[in-house]
Image 1: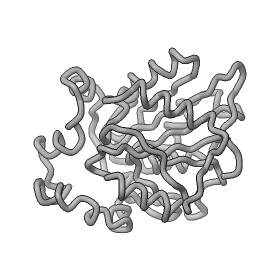
Image 2 (image 1 turned 180 degrees about the vertical axis):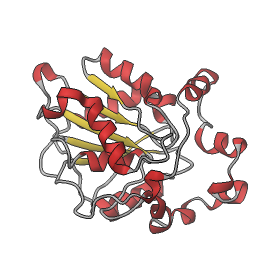
Image 3 (image 1 turned 45 degrees about the horizontal axis):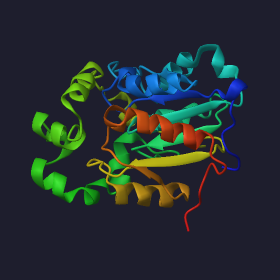
Image 4 (image 1 turned 60 degrees about the vertical axis):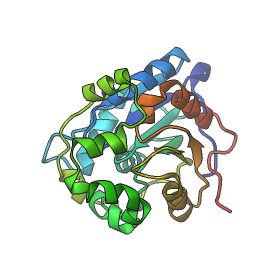
Length: 251
C-alpha cells in the first residue's frame, strides 16, 4: 500500500465495478454513466451469481474477462468491490495489475477466509442487534426485511432500477476461500456508507482498522449507494483514484 493509483493516458482511469450478492452489473448503471461523463472508463461486471457450479475462481474469471485486452494495461485500473463483491475484487488483484482496490460497503476479507465464515469471523451479528430483533436471522429475511435493510433510502425510481439488477445468488462462492497467500500489495481504500443498515459504520470502521490497518473513508447513503447516490459515489471514486495517499493507516 505504498503508492497512489496512477491515471492513464489523458487522465483516464478504468473502474472495474463488481456488484454484491444477487446483483448484476446493472447495479452500477448510474455510477457508470457519471464516470463516463467525467471522461473515465467504467466496466460493470455480471458475475456468475446464478451458476451453482461457480466458485470464487469463476467469479474472478468473469471479472478479468470483462476487462478484455485492458487486463494487460498497467497504471490506470481501479477495482471496486461492493458487499460480497469484495472477495472477487481482492482475488482479481492477484490476476491483473491493479493500482487501487476499493472496498465499498464491503465484506472485507482476509486470506484463507470464505464468504460463508466471514459473518462469524467478523462477529457481524453483534453489529446489528436492532435489525436482528426486527427481522430475525438473515437466512429468514423476507421482502419487508430486505426493503428495510437494503432499500430504505431509495426513491421509487431507484427502487425500480434495483429490480432491474436482481439475479439469483447461488451458494458456490460462499464455500470458496480467498487464496491463502492473499493478494499482492495493492493500494487499498475502504469506503463505508454511514446509513448502511447491513454493515453499520462502526462495524466497517472496525474491520478497516483490524483487517487492513486503515481509517475508512466515509460517505452518506445506505448499502446500495450506487443507486441512491450515483453522482456522489462516482466523485468519491475519482477522488480516491487520484488521491495523494492511497492508504491511510489507522492510528
